[in-house]
Length: 179
Image 1: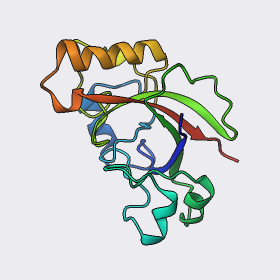
Image 2: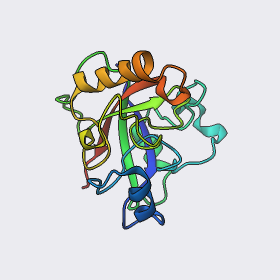
Image 3: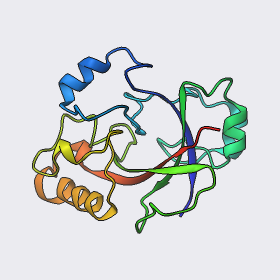
């Protein structure tokens, strides 16, 4: 399992205009923050890919904001106070919630469309036949691996196969602990 890193802007009542409107639109009233790889909700902190990044990033479509070297990523950020520094695992084959990832805490699982553009959990208006809004944690993630896989299968195969955002990958999300 490859561990990757990304820095995203925070989306919560303290850092974001539109928080109240988002809660009203989404119906996710339990949220205290959204932690996701969805760049519309939590824009990537490093918006442009510099030539110097190439040895340190994932060389795949839609993955140029994901770094393989945490120290390099941190060196490119001027100020991390209003950012989430995330450690992520794409397509974990098993429950990774108990992984001891030095300096990172497990937050949950996200379901991102194949373009790593939209979260099926927090930015598609809901898929009520596959999951209930109440199943999401206070940061908009699914806590249980088996349930996340079940939702992924239901989105893809059972309820919403023609929907582009329902064809999604499972991502394990960890956040760097504040020092």
